[in-house]
Length: 508
Figure 1 (cartoon, rainbow, N blue to C red):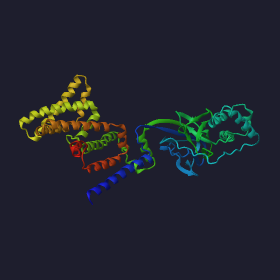
Figure 2 (cartoon, helix red, strand yellow):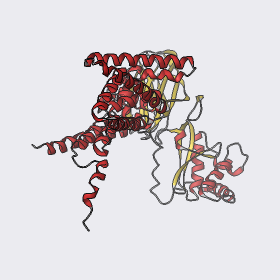
Figure 3 (spheres, rainbow, N blue to C red):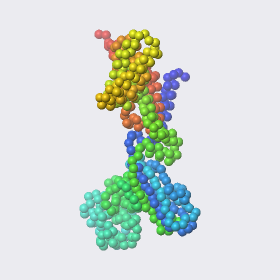
Figure 4 (tube, helix red, strand yellow):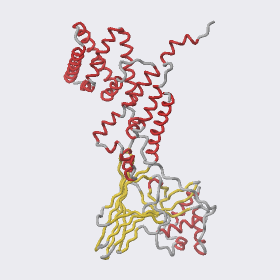
């Protein structure tokens, strides 16, 4: 097979693997394309009951499935119980069992999660008209409440809020008393509110959920009402009479009745504690991948120690600098001193900042060239001459460091970040180039090297780029594919077009 078809196959394979793994990690494992932190909600359930001295079984109904929520990890803090997760009719439940339980029992369960995206929009109701089941005196009472609520309502949502306010259980309204005459539980009360709203042709439903706002202890599940108004579902707080964002509530399935079921015990209760913390988006994605037992998440760089992670953060940026060098040399036509010396200079600039790094580089190389010019008259051999230049470079480093310390200019200590061996070779090569090609070629290649290093530095310091290559190292395969494609290009470079521009003119 010829070389060009092989290049096409290799590039296609690299792009497919690199982009495929990146998309999988983003949309399946939850890795983020942008840097930053995410709010992690820590929800802890405290289940308490009085055991009867025999086998005990505790069942806790979990929150409703939500594609926008990514769990991080879960823990159970009661070693004497066995915990399993089961699904019953689409409802997920946690079940604790124990063969013998005596006296007061307390079980803690914690779920940590964060939202990958805004909550999924609720599907609109399918039937044209909500079902109206109020009859007799209750229907007449509902019509009176609707009549008064509609006097100041300007929309369906405002009407629903007015009905909620008028049907407050503490109001001594005779019509409200008729509607709540046989009501015992909170869900039944909200059901009556929903029926009154339905009489106006507005869809609504009763849901239960846990508020995710601030830090709360000893919280319980709250009953809310959802109203389909202005073409969307709106969640209303029946006490504050305001709309609540779905992102602030952890909803429970609608088809569940009991939240906590206890067998072999009595006087059971469950309360919740809610807290929020900030955590790295990348680390959260790794935790979520480990929870889902993804093998790809096990090989993440986040699994390394912190000091090794910091090293890889720098190493993974080197291919990005290499791409900049390849583009400028092979497509633009900029000449540099050495192929990858600009990358090493760019890495140094990341430690010293650009302007300070340029200044120190010019000082060290300038003084080194003067000393190298003197050594050329001594007719030394190659290795001793380069070793002498290295000694001179170290002396320059020490002089700059001591002088800057005495002058109170602590930025001068940044000269220690420059690679001494590379600078020694740079001084030697430029000195030889000066003797063979003249100072003009030295300025061209030296200026090209500094320009390439500066551009690579500006690209490599991007926090978004650093986040991408660190969280998606498979993108290096995409960089490799691009470099191979550029390597197969044999046409004119951008700076060469001016040389051949006269050939495009037509003879007059």
